[in-house]
Length: 228
Image (cartoon, rainbow, N blue to C red; front, side, top):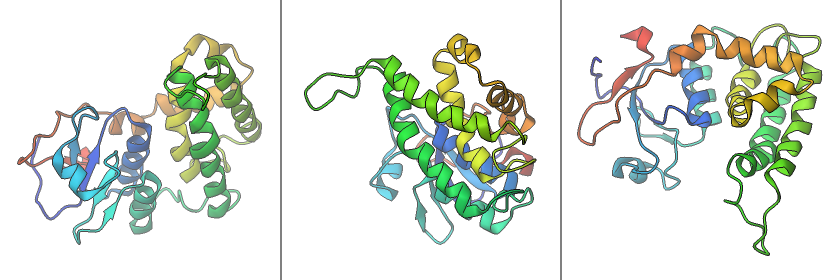
């Protein structure tokens, strides 16, 4: 894999993290080159901790040294520079509408997703925990609203993908993979088709390459690969 110049923005990433995934999607489609540093979440490098007290991926450090440690912020950073797919201008609705829907997914949806995927990791104040199925059903109710959106359009805000689709898809994918048989049995044909089309897309494949773990003191890899 070719090395990159130190003048590129640096992206700390973890391949399977849905937040990092959506950041890479925006960087890929916008063509914004960066130095990607793949990290292990169980062994985070000191450099990541130094630039962000949050110390979770993704984190982008631009060439001026500005740190962006929110995935949606990285998406906006990339797309504000170049947005060839018009992700910030959906075919239907507005950017504000998309951000409102994304906030729901980042909030209640993610809350219940974590507790469904990792049962027992998040006890209630009294030490008990809701059954994983209760959290699954709470997410399911929110997915039903996405199914309704997709009944008449191929994407969440019209006929073509936009910011909301790409910010939300990684989390729906994560939910679906917890119990694929259960997910496939639900009455969400349009949601399932939306997810399946994305999972089979060249775009997803382009951001899911398995890079070697970055070693401190070395140069990362150039991302997107299409720019090498």
